[in-house]
Image (cartoon, rainbow, N blue to C red; front, side, top):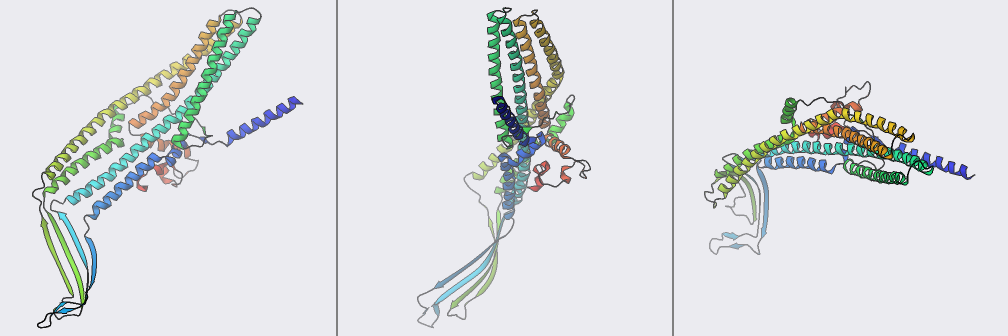
Length: 467
């Protein structure tokens, strides 16, 4: 009866666990990207910067539009007063006036147009910064995604190692009881088994930490599952074409180049402060009083022009001009420095990819040889032809081979993404990959995300026109 109850409990527990696992959503890398972009605060901050830059352009444009002002006043006196001779009114009983005024001022150097140009360039720079933020964020999501897969594989390797050492410990214990092995062999097996249990616990905790990091970055639910998909083999890096792509397509380079143009325009804007300013105004005024007089003017329209030239301000304009020139030199130096850094980043990522790609086959061979060696040594040990030290060496070799191959496999996936990022092609690559995942047979869009409905598609997050 107890055995039947235990079996029922085990069956129910298995059903519950399977139900929980089946209910968890499984994410591909593209779906993880899409979910991450929906919930990222950093991307929203970058989008707000684009919005702020557009408001700055509106502010610069407002300086080119005349300012209209309406005004009015009403006064009431204690009494009306007249002169003692001639009865001429000198203080009415009440008076009122209102009017409309138009003002427009501009510099003869047209520096207001320079400010408008700078505002437009600021929008372009903010858009490039947004794409750069998207690229860096998605690379981080991809690295975290593969970190979870790497940690999951590490748990599998730790479990396999624990199973092998458990089997080895059972074999040593059995042979010790019949007197074929000494106590030291049993102690060595127990020590190795305890170490394997510690490694397994460490691997499980590392997996939990990696999952927590992905939940934080991508906004996934706690019970998510990941669907692994290998990247296609990329072949050798073509340095010339990748470098040309990086120089043409990397948005951080475009942002720095736009910053240089803005600094040049700022110099021109600052130079315009040495020019005079012209002010134009036009006024329409209406007035009324009680009592009225024959000479009272109740309506007038007039305009005027003013010229302002501050010829001495204590060296303020000169200091501002020199500051603008210094910032221009800084912008050029920063741009040149970034171009040199891009070359190093691209070279490093290409070498890392080629190194991992070349070593993967050797690591696969090493794993195969290590597994065959372990199986052979275990058979020899069971037949008394190998010592416990031989078994430990064979198991250590197999464990190292499994770990090295796992790390190299997932590091290759990360290195592939880094090459795309350093060459400026990551956003396009992600969009095309997600399009291939989402494309269904007979899809009239032909895999083009821009031809699809915008709801829930990854392309909408890369489209700056929608901001």
